[in-house]
Length: 383
Figure 1 (tube, helix red, strand yellow):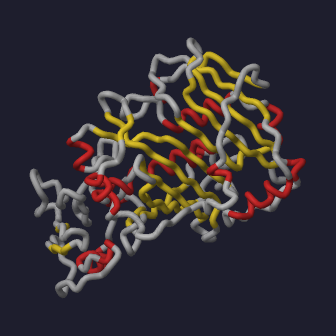
Figure 2 (figure 1 turned 90 degrees about the vertical axis):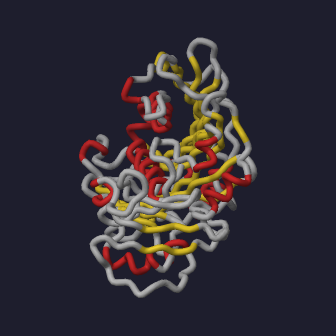
Figure 3 (figure 1 turned 90 degrees about the horizontal axis):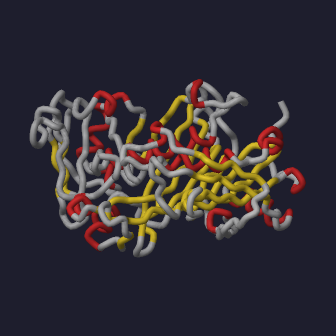
């Protein structure tokens, strides 16, 4: 998903007026920040025009946003109070988005560090804010104008998260995200997570999304019209948060067959698990996967990598079984290379301290597959 909130300060509006947020500065008028600035600039892609207006110069009923069929941009004084207070903005070239978050006390677990669900929720939040900032729909689907006309939405196909160091309560993390095309059937979104105080990279993630008809629930190829609408906000060259060479993010996940070594059956979605689209939120699946992890592993290890393949939507009245089985780690050298490729600060663990598991979420009644996954665990650091 794409979402963006452009919390521009007065001293940033000059750059915005010159279209530098779109990647290539274009000569613009001499500009002095005013309370209600009105500036327009020409986009370099197909000469579409974006305009920047204040809350008194917006489109419609004083919305404070304006744009072509591609997207819209907000400026200070426009949009909601949340837009103005949010600690996020487009990067200078306009092709990615960064936002800072404080880890709250209710977002940490028994170790006083953020849970993997917290990190996944922050990834989702910054992605949604990115999309909103470039003017995509604010209904939770992050759809382009053409997608809305055709009743199309984005759905998650695969999510891969690597955590090198868990942030603690009151730590500040900065997350950068961007999108790019991924063949004819979808798009991908990547993230880099940093400790804001030190600038150290503490996590990375990548995901793949496909387009679905909201009514028929059938997948659909990404048309050229849709592709043109979102590629203008994507890096011009392929940019990967996680290099694909030797990356566990690309490894195929085999289906876990019965009997599983560990299981948790009869999981029922709570009302709080439903998202704004009336389906079980993607992050809920992570919690269900962890429910069937052996307690002795939870006590001695911490999750360092999780990969999920989403295969079926889960409804509010479904009953879910979570299955887990340990997967042999292939060899020490391969694991060491995987850990070192992505620029993590993780010490290359002894192979004896690593654990790897396969997971399956299925409907209790008919056994239909909802989600399959793989997790990798490292020994908890000494305290």
